[in-house]
Length: 250
Image 1 (tube, rainbow, N blue to C red):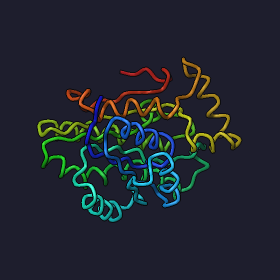
Image 2: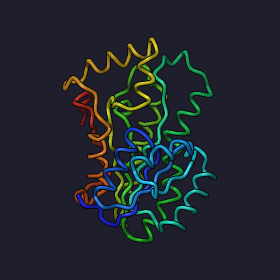
Image 3: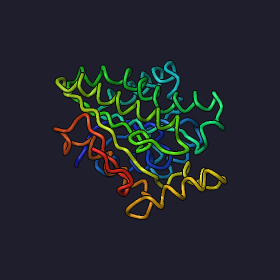
Image 4: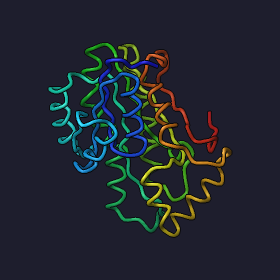
């Protein structure tokens, strides 16, 4: 699954799945840039990815910020070959306990962020006649999940969006696929696990996993790199769950 000399952008690339993905792409020969919400996170990621790694602080839910960052990245890198939309945000909570501001942030980050990055990076891919977009979704978006109603709605929207864009651009050499993790050992999961009801919901979820364990970020990264690589050259519009068998859907 060599991605030698490919230019890769990983959003949400400073921690968890995003950081593991950026590292694996680097190990397989790609030139990698990351986006994260805060400069401090990018500085931390450089301990893993190297001091020369190019990172940008970007709120993917802001179209103006996304386009400005894309222009700066293009000047530094040239056009992106592989886009990994990994940036995400959620809390595990009951729907009726949530507020509109929380809903708006969840949808902006998880759905609009994918729409915005696709809108600004896709033209270069089409002009090159090749490219791959890998959207990190969630099994919550495939089958629903207690305590994740708005997150599930946003990720379900990304799945439908991905399949639609895949149909539009397949003839022009661009592939669009989704990797759908189940519970994964990330900072967000660990933070949510520490809070009362949220911790109980996550504990119950893990007990339903046939493999009886949550995923490590590196296990999800392998699937993402596969979809970005030539090994998946005839695969588009697909959703691959990496969830230990938590969901088994067609």
